[in-house]
Length: 165
Image (cartoon, rainbow, N blue to C red; front, side, top):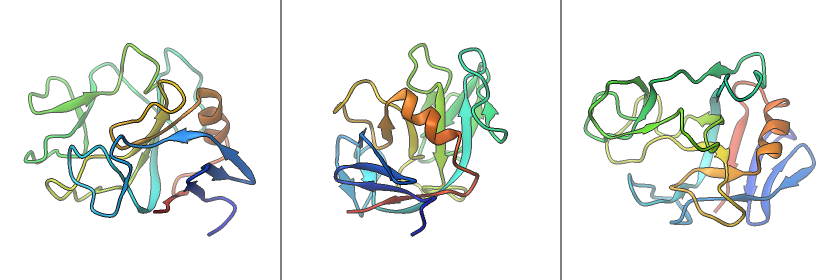
């Protein structure tokens, strides 16, 4: 481990000497993640993208990519675009990235089950804004908006997210 790693512990997310409160999936932590189980997978993952809403905030880092109207994330386990960024119209199951609420205004995308997704293993694990403290996600890691922004200003492409069991 290095000081540049994001380390998820039972007491929060550690990064560069600070601890940030966060929430995980409603299914807790799991070494056997499956699509729809609501669990956050245990392991080490790289940050492969940083997405942001350009109509709501300034670019948080030079390598951040804007979320456009019609951007979706496929969670259709049997589809060839499973666990990939797709564009509307897209009929199979998906998540809308440009949401009405602020949860996805800033998204760290990890390489969980990506780029060569295996059906049923679970779609992408994001780091994004939480609804409120203690409110679980569907498997992602969520935290306060200001903490996400502070971290976004310091991470680089390939930064590791380490989820300990």
